Length: 202
Ligand SMILES: [Mg+2]
Ligand SMILES: [Zn+2]
Image: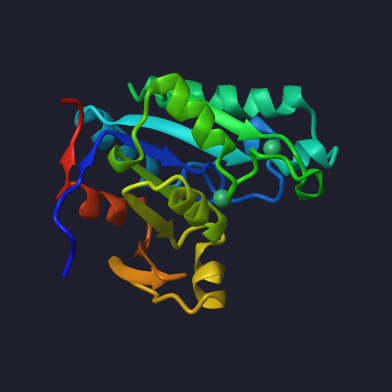
């Protein structure tokens, strides 16, 4: 039923609604709340030598809802919290534009993938994308990532409902726009799927 085991070396994650709770235009470090399964998940990735990247749309910047300094304070707190748990994030990349600016870096466009893949020599067939919106999934599909996970945290449940994707209490394969994706209840179940793949550096 499941395709056998690609070799996964890189995991790209959306931020809001995927690793931390979705808050409307989050921009205060004190509003950061990690999902209970996030730290364990990321630790398991690092224990298997998988590289972690955060890829986030932050249109609140382009809309003038918060400043670049606000954004960096939030990014710093996330990084520090993860480092306290010995979780290294290779890089965080963000799109600061609002949709009307039609930039090339707002997911689902692949500008942020291009940046990361060039800088870190990432291969899409060794990379996975995880997000709570179908724009994240589309980004992963556009970049030709090996596996694309929609998590049902954050906007995920609404997205699944809107696009008639199956709900699951664990994980399930689904077809969206003619492409195979994986719907997972949360990051714990992403791990249940991923741990069956070949993981880490060569
Ligand atoms: Mg999100
Ligand atoms: Zn952009």
